[in-house]
Length: 255
Image (spheres, one colour):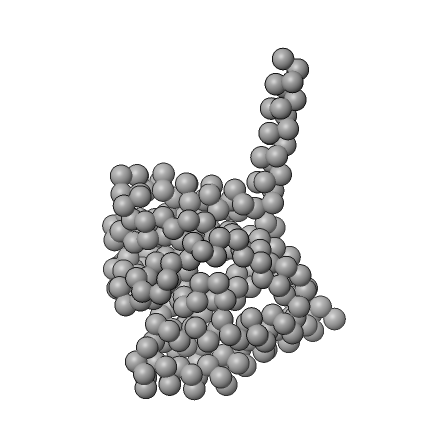
């Protein structure tokens, strides 16, 4: 049954992406010339339709940290599930993504990715030359770009180390970064099996990190700080912190 529901979820998402999305792309992108706003419709679709059908609730802490529309910013988040992409739009609004280049090979889907401002990432590093400038150009036009620096989805809630790419670009092109922690997406739409479950996704939006805040930091320090900040809101990190605090308190009382 869960496999059938998961199939239905993907079918609804991709059906609406083409049947509703393409006319909206033509209207907003070509008639009104507002390509950077095309993904705003995704917020309506997921909150008013998809999440209600599949009983997915979205709880957000720190929504006030999302900058108002205008200057673009880069969103950095942990990655557990295909659902990670879907929950971004209701909270952030307009955002494109950096994603593996093989997705652009899919008919129609690849065209949609291009139109909404997504950026392909190639396995061959040479093909990624100039990507930082491309990101900076997108941001200057009002796009927001979401990046999952782990590079692939984890099968549990534990984070992998972050890759360097987006942080090298940040040091070179000086853009603002919005760190976000995603909790429970991997339980609702897991990577390890074809199923979907109802439940609550929690999103923690951390304060915006402006370019001047990390101007004097080495790239590796920025990368690790962003990783640790995002990880700190995950349940296993919270549990470890609580255990440490309890141990420290017990040691203090013994003295």
